[in-house]
Image 1 (tube, one colour):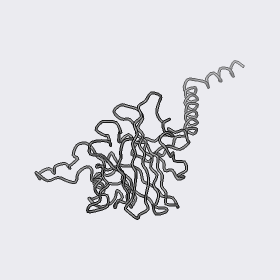
Image 2 (cartoon, helix red, strand yellow; image 1 turned 90 degrees about the horizontal axis):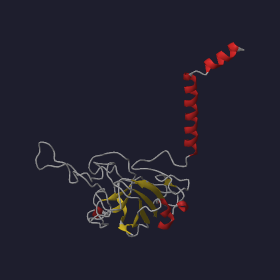
Image 3 (cartoon, helix red, strand yellow; image 1 turned 120 degrees about the vertical axis):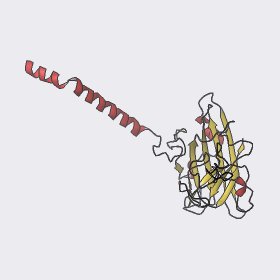
Image 4 (cartoon, helix red, strand yellow; image 1 turned 60 degrees about the vertical axis):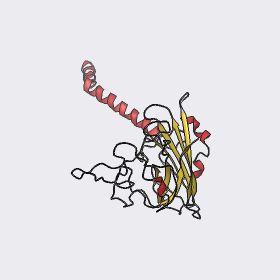
Length: 261
C-alpha cells in the first residue's frame, strides 16, 4: 500500500500537474470562444463586434434586410452610459431612371483619438445577385460632369501625400495621389466592404470601423470639404491596381452626400 501511494504521488508531480492545468485552461478558452456571439471572420477594414446583442456580428453582410434597424434610435444602445453619440446619414440615389435608392447611417459612440463608427447601409434597385464596391469619397458632392458622380472625387484618404508623393529624381512630377481609387487601394480611410444584393435587388450592410470619425479631427468625414458615399457597378477586388484599372469597383452607380444629423 505504501508503494502504491508513493507511485500515485510520483505521477502527480509538478510537470504532470502543469499539463493538467494547461489542458483545463485550454478547454475553458475553447468553450468561451464557442459561446461567443461575435463573428470571428471579420471582413477587414476595421473592427467587428455584435454590439446590438442581436446575434449578428457588425461587419458581416445582412442577408435578410428585415434584420436591419430602420431608425437611429434602435441603435442608441451601442453607447456606454454617458458616452458621446454623434450621428450622420446620407440619402443614396442612382442616376435618374435607374431605380436605385437607399440610405446610409453613421453612428459614432465614444470619444478619444480612435472612436468607432457603425455604418448601416440599405440599398434597393440593384441587379439581383450582384456584388458592388462601396466607399466613402473625399468630397461632399454627387455632381456628374465627365462621368457619373465624379464630383465626389477619389476615396476618402486624409493625411500625407494626398496630392501624390514626388517622384525621386523627377522634380515637379507626382504619381497619382493617395485618394486614387485604384492605386492606393485598399488603404484608404473610406474603404468599406462590398454590398451584396439578394434576389430582390436589395443589399444591406452593418459594419463598424475605426478608420473614420464623425467628431472633429483628421479622420472626420464631416470636414469642410464634405464627403459622400458611393456605390460602384462592380465588386471591389480588395487589391491595388493601375490607375483607372477599376479594381476598386469601377463605374459609379449611386451616390449620397454625408450630412450630420
